[in-house]
Every structure is written in C-alpha cells, then in structure tokens.
Length: 109
Image (cartoon, rainbow, N blue to C red):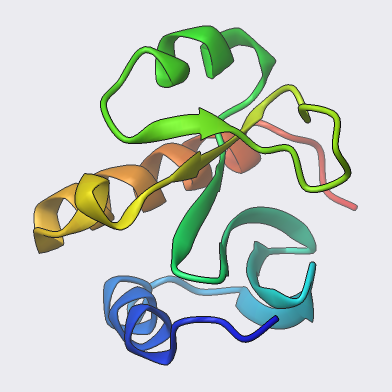
C-alpha cells in the first residue's frame, strides 16, 4: 500500500524542529518515531496517531477518527484520522503534538 507523499511532506514540515525524530516504512506506510517510539504515521491517506490508552476513548469521540484496526482488531491507544480531520495545518500539528506528548512520557528504549 502506498502512502500519501504530500502528507509525508506536511508532517516533515511540522516536525522540522524536533530532534531525534526518524522515519521508518511500516504497516505498508510511513511511521515517525521519537527515540525509537512510534508516535504518528501515514497509512494510505490517513494519519495514524498514538494517543495512548488513557486518551484513546476521548480521541475516538472526535470527528473523522476511528480505531486503528490494521490487523483486523483495534489497537488500543492508536487512532486513524481521516484527511478531513487534518486539512488545516494547525489540525495536523495538534494531532502530531498529541502523539509526541504521549511518547515523551515513555521510558527510553
């Protein structure tokens, strides 16, 4: 599955000032990692965001989101955001920051 290169460029712009962010092709798409912890990515045209278990249910209540069900089972703590949910740059930045905020709370790998 190909991923949206335009979205990849937008994410790179949002993350341009972040240290320790790397990219890795995963899930047939592209993942962004901070010190080895995946926090967001692209699968097809959708944004994948790791919000964590505590914020998972709340994130699913937001427009244009759904459970990340890459394996056929929902992965608790991860959501997909449809393109309508990050059309504006500030919306994209908000989702990216939510993912970063979660992984910043994790111990180093």
